[in-house]
Image (cartoon, rainbow, N blue to C red; front, side):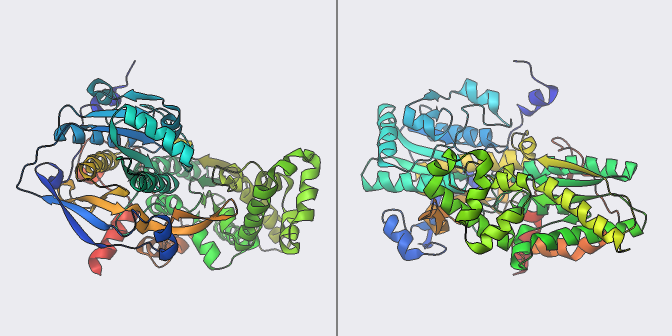
Length: 552
């Protein structure tokens, strides 16, 4: 395989890790925990893994002898930069316990466990993938682990390979699956531990014990570089408004972080739109007003950042989508048999009066996109809704109306972009390379401590890596009950942008100036070699949040 100069240089990078992972490690347990909400329901569903304590690793003095251990690993869901380093950390961690320990990777996600498709990950293979992006070492998949039949099929291959612990690397849904699996194996006395690792570029898997999900840092730096390039072009040509949609279906963390890095003219935060009960018309008017204001100053150009999930956060649209999700979950086969040209009229007839009116008012393309096949969790696939085109088109129409009223004088030409896959498999930043390796090594430590139903946790990551705090958090602690496919299910609670949080407050305090002025910042590409203030900086979001904690 031909390698680039960067690949060759990155292969020898040694990730920085917490000092507690370097020597003799012992585990320190905290107080019993409870779920973020619905404690009785969660406890009833997870009697064997509920209420466990938070644990952290501290420096020990007593060296233990460990027997060889066989561990399985699964990459689940969408890719995120750093996944390969999590696996490398697990590998090095279990080899440090005993050199004869073995690691098996299940091919193409949870489906590989069920279908018994696997490969042993040896040092030769691991070394090829250290500090690289992507999940191509074993591939990923979105098969949900939720039935007894699946659990038992998986257990058969785990027993055959003498695997006593399984690490699932994934987002909130994947880690929910890990917890369900851990509970089943504990209940049946299967003798298999299950540990999760927090992955998602969306940044919505975080809480007081999980500072950030891995991949968020790298993805935001990749997007910010490209947005910065667009802004440089925008400020050079001075003739286009760029509408840029960014990944983040359930939360606006990526859009907010990129805004803090590049200082665009407009960044819409979905959580604020919902909190202020704004309509689609309100959003359009806000953008149009900024365009008109800049045009009055002779600036017929600018940038607008749009979170992928914006449509779902507009309250009236959210009600519509929820009713659509429930209707299509219950009538999927019937709906698919209806002639495509008649589907819109059918939906209008079946919805409640309020939602029917809203649905009927939508452009044909958007209405169609709202009824496309659901994702594996029964939700509308918002990435298929071309929100950037919808906003660009509707802002253009609003400006035409404003021009007739004498409220706008200018030229409005648009370019639209959607940045998604570009950020999912980039070579991990130094932060993600270090953080991911530490998460994997920590997972090995949780396994050696006999834990199951835990998520690997590495905190204090704005400090030098040697001062990071490694440990584990019970997955049940993060859970609540949510409606999925029309039924209440236990899931890890998504972390949304906090409107009273530091990152949003910093953004809100500057956005009015950014709207009128051209205060663009051009971050440039990720730097892997050089001064630590250039190469090792975490996201602005994390820096601001950690400063907040220190002030409390």
